[in-house]
Length: 175
Image (cartoon, rainbow, N blue to C red; front, side, top):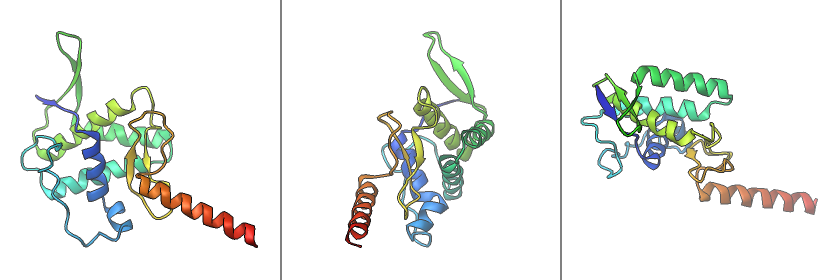
């Protein structure tokens, strides 16, 4: 059995936004080379994660983030947990940790991402996760402040949306 460490949330978000087909296509990057993520100091310590595994995990995670209903999101998440074969365990200090019998890099990465998302959503349900509300962006975000009010992946998208709304109001007022 392998002990699973949760991947850092900023790394998970970067994985999804850089490797999932939907954000790459929306950004016009679907033919660009993929960035190197496994050399990032925040990357999980999993040896030899192949690019197809990164793409597959990112795609599954993006579908989870983009799910509209809570029941759809729960079903997708439960499928990820099943595929990662995560089992909760408790140590002598009553601390919860996760284990899996999987040894291949794709499921180990999926397990680390699932553990991170479990920790991020406890107490806040699914409201902390989503896809950007900007019209031209499908990047994902995790609201680490925990207020559940975040709707944009970055301040850049938020500012663009505010400028569009302002200009729209100005045009409507001048007509």
